[in-house]
Length: 279
Length: 270
Image (tube, rainbow over all chains, first blue to last red; front, side, top):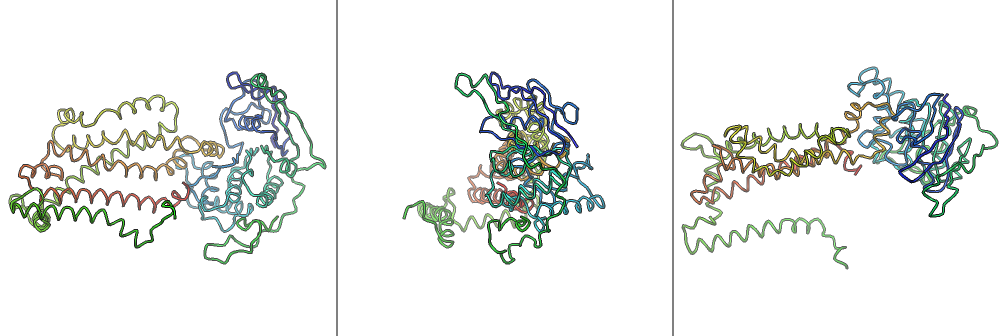
């Protein structure tokens, strides 16, 4: 349960003003979508929430306290690409989150603690619809499956805030619809405040409780550098969506991802996306 | 059909791959035959038969003076030096390369220094090494190490910096410390790249090995070649050169296969 408060936030790169006097309050367990044209600073804003960049002026408060100076386990993230580790299997990627938390010296878990972590990880892998792919490396997964894995990995660490940087932007429409269902399920079942950057308005209205549009109000060449983006629209989605109200669980996927020697599953828009039956 | 679209089938590919080797051997045999026809005592291009005799003599006949099988004792002495140097270089490069690649403070401290050191011609240091460390094994191992370590360090540091920024951020959001990131994120992804870098340094490593052995040594492949050069013993030199080449090719091949075996994810993730 973590509220995010942004107070008079400015971000400048040299003479270039990117964000101009942004003030926002995000309620706990909100699902915020940040939209806007390219170069409007929405990704910069997300990076500030991630502590990858720092504000030039103003402050960001998380749960009432100033934001940490470096990325940490309280804020999970899924990027558009490179969010999972190519040298670890699906299971290894998810278990890694537990290993980082519990094994500061070796970075590895053994014995009963490993089995407990693996069991938890398998549960999450099943929840995001990757059951059967536990031993595959990310390179063998489709883009949609990699993003499902990235979600499971981020959730495994139980962050209070989940930051998404155009996570589904590179996916086909059919696969995107499936993964939206996974995302909503996670938002309903985990105690998460989600902030998502997207350039897809339909996606924003499908998922979010509140949509914030960034825009540069002055975009003439001679004004561009000295005027940053401000909030153009702040829309509460109606009817109101409340996290945790859709507890009715989706039926679990009834089949595993086929191995390379298994018969192909019936074709459809998401044939490499095993959870398409949950959609 | 355009030339860029012409693909040889497997049989043709095999024949084409063998062709340059066959041509070299053929040219040698013809040249040798021609020279020997003019002068049966010619030493420059000995016949395949006398090459064979020389191989039997150095590889399978005990040396009359020492009782050693020369080729094998030379190979053993050389590989011992080479592997010692490769092990030392790899260990140094792994630690320093990762530190430079991961930690901005160390990068500022060491990157310009390593860049400068890597430009010092190692062979120019050989006299210094001989003066300081003597003519024993240490100076030879040191020469190879000095020759390839800066390259390995710079290559590894660059490979570390090439890892996507997203991965480092992601690891931090999973709560990883710098140490954990080094251990679980950077090191496993650097090892296959290290094996590639090692493959590329095999050539220079052999160069420095032969050079050190040629100048001051009493055993080793390079020593033998430069020793028998005094007698124009091409029948020994040529098999030795072929043998050195074969050793390097075998190491290269082994490293390539080992990388594929130990890091199955690597090729696909590229």
